[in-house]
Length: 53
View 1: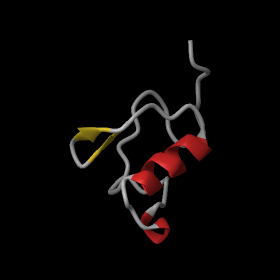
View 2: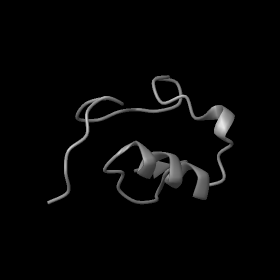
View 3: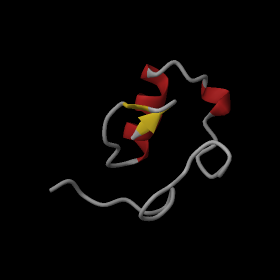
View 4: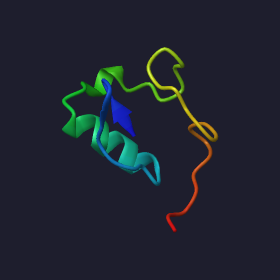
């Protein structure tokens, strides 16, 4: 996952995504995960997650 051009980690499920965004200082009100203006999903979307490994 990259936030503002900086790699911050890998999200394996929604809670990872929310935590990485929180740690980056993004306000929760701005974390609409299905808004293409905020998140560029690659390899799926907010409903698609793959297990690590």
